[in-house]
Amino acid sequence: MADSIGHLPRGPRGIYRATLWSLKGLRAAWLHESSFRLEVVLFVILAPLGFHLGTSGLERALLIGSMTLVMAMELLNSAVEAVIERYGPEIHELAGRAKDMGSAAVFVLMMNVVLTWSLILLPRLLEQH
Image 1 (cartoon, helix red, strand yellow):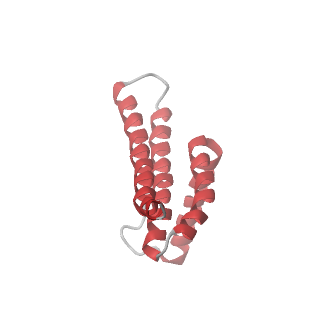
Image 2: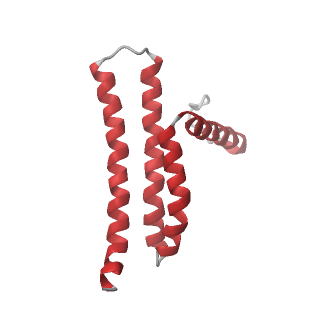
């Protein structure tokens, strides 16, 4: 929700409410978005692996952080789709373009995960042979 008092600091109560709204959004995504559920399941499986395979804090941050970016973009993509669906099911070129671009953004970040994991882990595998 937007700040109703201008740009004043939120304070503890405002931070608490923002946290509740965020949790509400995560719950809605979990309940209504199968892609988000799949990404969370993959994260739960791969994050411990990334933590184990990363040899430094930076590597761990890259391996795990790249996956969190996918989930964040999936949330934004789902938000765009929800707003478009709010205005009706009729087909419109701009609505289709917006949905396609949101999907493409998720795809680009998925490719970032593949690239990040490959650049960090492939050299180790190649050294062993």
